Image (cartoon, rainbow, N blue to C red; front, side, top):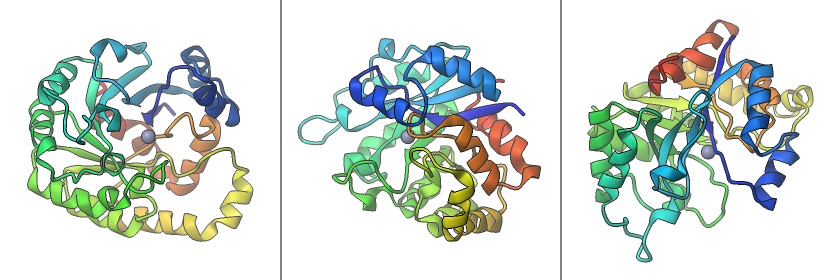
Length: 273
Ligand SMILES: [Zn+2]
């Protein structure tokens, strides 16, 4: 089965980012990823952008990756406002074939998805027919505010922008009930399953000890039954790539694997694979 990783981050080499990859049994470089992708039949990845709006910063091997241009907190000015020319800068990316969407980080930015600064971004995404991925649910840093990344916040924006497509990252974890409701209600919202683990795990032990949590995940995914809207993703470099495939196989019934692991991401991000 071919696999697309619909959610990863590529960080430049530094002691901390290299350490993240080493902690999960990997190396922080694309040569290593290319090798592991080959071993696991991972045919493509969608890089969630960070840190820069320079188009030159976002040059990735095109046979392996597309990317979403990311509007993280490094792009706000000192008053937490948008940088000048934000829509034009984003459009420069959306014009590129290898840019397959936009990534928003509202919890980290302390900005509501309904904030006017995002309005032109939604319009552009609709015009280019490329989705807006949104970090939803728990955050990596305590200084982020969860109220901005709760799945119900996406409901309002998705309902008011029916021509814009959205991807709810991390299935809004751990706000699973709300996440399921938002995906079920809104035809323009899909969800990725990235970042539900962090670090290495013994899966047999994990499925036993975390049976309650795993059951909640399975329950809500199965309850809405929208297997055309659920995308496999890892949130590399925080997980071991082989382990994460087995983890998601443990959540998703086998008859839906082809869609979840490949076809949905290919369609939603327009990867043309
Ligand atoms: Zn991520």
